[in-house]
Length: 626
Image 1 (cartoon, helix red, strand yellow):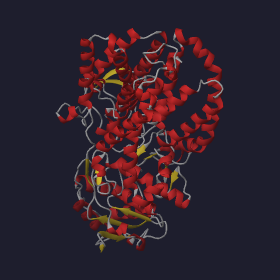
Image 2 (image 1 turned 60 degrees about the vertical axis):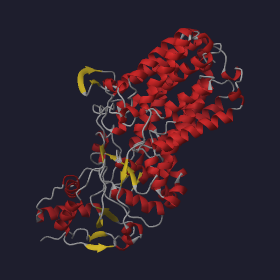
Image 3 (image 1 turned 30 degrees about the vertical axis):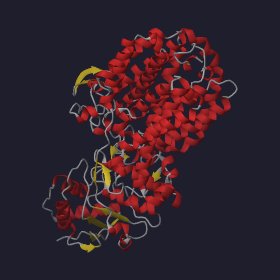
Image 4 (image 1 turned 90 degrees about the vertical axis):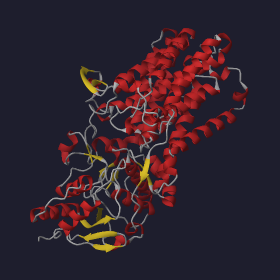
């Protein structure tokens, strides 16, 4: 199979026909070594959370960590109550949240439910985050070793690069979906197996199961993987040296894909319905596709969480530290251009077909990552790009363009592995000066982007009022309780504390608002509009957000109290509470005193219960006029 031919073998030799090296003869030792290195690196990147998982939070993305901890706790709620995995009524009272239109990581929430119940969603979160990073590097290593290179060292270096590329370390700031990069090589592996004669039924079933699993963990990443597979296969199949090989495989591949469609379609029918047509579905995404694009200069820059960033060479061209999706640096870009030319010159016709297809995939995703308009050094230039034609198409309208740059990590990792393979297996034919130059180039390219641990900060501890179950005395069964300020991505404590009660099982309260993606309004109009972050704010929740973020305390009148009565009655709130500590993002201090002053002005004097201030709310009655 030419797509799998190592550079040191004939273009049609599959890897299984190569002579075994000592490590290949005992692969478990190599596998164990790479796995341990990957796990150690993942633990190093996430060590700030591991040091105190209950009180530490990712300072660059407090909101997303709260969201994923909430989802993990909801997994316990699903198993304990039979709740709908794709629609939750315990958040955003009284409407609920369409989880299929969000990132629901359903497989993770169910598989890790026992750990969540035993140790809490904080432990499950950091465990999955660590395993995602390590697993991505390890599975990429296995993929490269099986399909593209014969050198264990080349596969290991390429795999570690793919797993810990700047974009994935950046997404380790809270994204359990995007750090699940192991899904990509697993799916690609099974796609390449579709052509195996006589195995179309089994291969189709396996791929269908994988697609269903991948959709439940990282649907946007699965979309990118499908795009990459299609572009690669098309570019590879059109190459003259392998065209007949590709044509011969078409009947087998089509039969397998038919089985895949049936299996995946059956398993995904309900979640796909919920995503596109279910209650509280919406069009597109809640984020601006003109803002979340990759600046061309960012490919030449260094990430903030890297050795180069530590030395002051980091860049702030990204929209935030969670979306530094390229940031490879000039040395690596230059090295890979040289590597591609060198590999091309040394490759036979079959290998050139593979290299060409890899290059086409890279250019395709590079251009898409730039978004609908070209950006350079932080400025948008009025030059329309291909994404402008795609932005309103289904799936593309829900994607953030800059995340297409994550596919370049896989492309670059493959090229890096092929380069190392060439250096190792052709050592005798490469002049010493060139070997030295290439080795130095690899070091200069990779050392600056070696990752730093993700940043963390302290977060407000769970109040005893919640932990001890005292809240049950203030809320009826399935009643609505809210912390102040109301839960949102920039002050997510209330959502976290609800998650902790779900993780323990038993009685549960609902909350208004929350951090999620939802429609701008209800009904058919909401389906036609792009989404938004959280629920549309009402006067009362916005009142407390302003107090928390800006310290703004307005003079309130009975008109404000009347509005608050109507808002609280709409939500069905029975009690509100204010903890002694509240958490902001990126080490930002929230103005708790302003929140307390506003609450007293609106609701009157509170009662002190355990370690919180509580105000009972009689729907339609409180707050009373003064």
